[in-house]
Image (cartoon, rainbow, N blue to C red):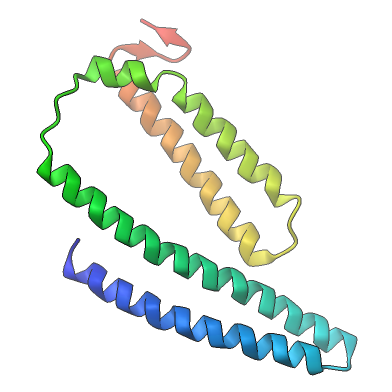
Length: 148
């Protein structure tokens, strides 16, 4: 990846350390608070911060995986025909839509705002994936709901 991703990784690592210390701070304060409203507000901040920590950790891991993927893709020469790729993708746009719906279903089950935001973003990505697969299928001559 580019040098800008090196900066991104460095900054994510710094933010990860910050979020980790913030989690400890908010949990500690929530445990010490005697006022229930204050305790609940601090608990909410701590829960969101835990989500932030793990999202950042996941983003760092994802960037590393993407770097490896991009290197492999640069090194390898493709050999599969569009028709073969499209044939392998048949039904996957439906799977992406099902995964999108599953993320949306989870929104009703969680009460942590930052987790809801991440689930919504993941749902949007799955919708994008379904559209990209539909586009590949159309390029290969498949129409929605079956071939030509």
